[in-house]
Structures are given as structure tokens and as C-alpha cells.
Image (cartoon, rainbow, N blue to C red; front, top):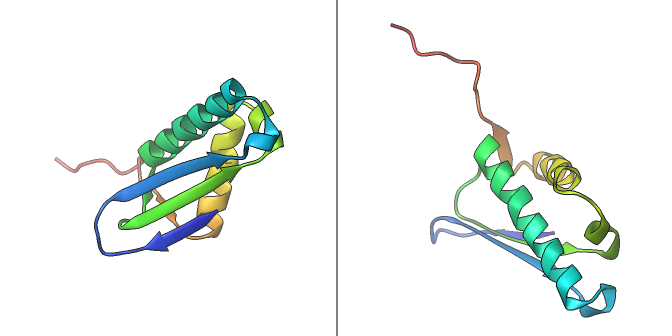
Length: 94
């Protein structure tokens, strides 16, 4: 994973898969799964602003399901301090 913080605003995400790992349809599926896992992560957590992220999917990653990718992304982003959990348990006071 590569990431870079800049002041250009927004979050940019890219995923790469080397040709040597699989055929085109398998690589495309892997990228779709990675994008969906990132969307879920962004929906459930607050990702730090002004960041560009590039993830490289390996051969083993092409065989797993979206939930497994999501769990690994969550661990990685937490370890790198790129996300903060949203507080869903707080309620508005009347």
C-alpha cells in the first residue's frame, strides 16, 4: 500500500493487479471487489481527508470474498491511522 497526503482535497483510491497473476476477467473482478470493500470502509469509518491511496492486489487476494478484503483493509487502515471509527452509539439529545 502506498499513500500520500496532499492539500488538493478529497480522497482518491486506486487498485492495481499485475498481469502475471491472472487473466483479465479475474483481475477485473479483484479490482471490483477491492473498490466495493473500500466503499464499505468509507461508509463505516471516517477516512482522513486529502489522501491518495494505491493498493496492489496479489494473487491470493483474487481468490477471497469482499468481506475478507474489507476486514484486511480495516486492519491495515487502522494500523496506519488512516481511519477513525464513526460513533454510531451517540444519540441526539432532545
